Amino acid sequence: QVQLVESGGGLVQAGDSLRLSCAASRRTFSAYTIGWFRQAPGKAREFVAAITWSGGTTYYADSVKGRFTISGDGAKNTVYLQMNSLKPEDTALYHCAAKTSAGRVVQTPSYGYWGQGTQVTVSS
Image (tube, rainbow, N blue to C red; front, top):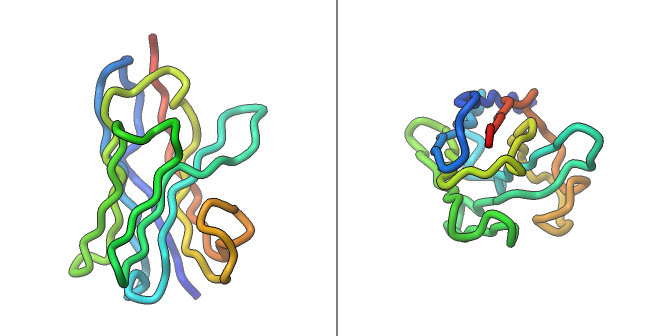
């Protein structure tokens, strides 16, 4: 069983930055691709970014490309999401997840382990 715990969310103004953290309960990241997803009220959960730990390959949604950066620290078993130039439309509950199937990186069914999420609210 893999446990993922997110932290770092908060209330910020448009243009500000936040760094989210996703800590795993055991050495997870050498085995899994880790993704960040977000869900705004009344909307479907959507892909934000992912990192393939073995190769360090990163993926981003078009809406965050150039503003968000995903990275990892193997020694700390933690993946980060640095979010710059935040916009009100980035407001959502952000979850990290471990990919457990051969499905596409951007699809939620590809991920078998999920954290509870951390809330990000961006005011205009």
